Image 1 (cartoon, rainbow, N blue to C red):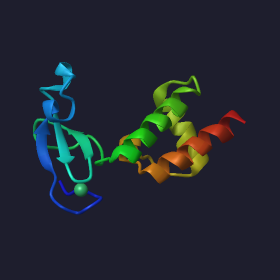
Image 2: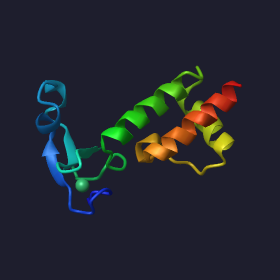
Image 3: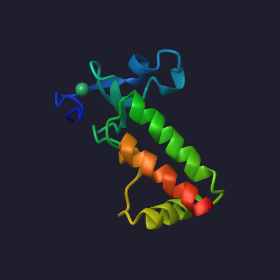
Length: 113
Ligand SMILES: [Zn+2]
């Protein structure tokens, strides 16, 4: 995996590297770029669970998820309604940039009126 911020190769690390105090995450894998502090969860086969995210993007994705949950709909229904409002193709939050998340949150606000 290539880091989207610096274009250098990311390293596959164990959860203890990113979350030293979260023993429940120690046996998980992550693609990690130390200079950019960017990471994303990885599967055992090295497949990624989204696109790598730096601090700003991780925070933006957390805000996007909580905005989606604030609609009080089932997760996939809420996602469908928001993407329809945005006129976007199906894209998971785990692949969104910080800018995407900002637009996503605006769409939630429009839905709520
Ligand atoms: Zn990087």
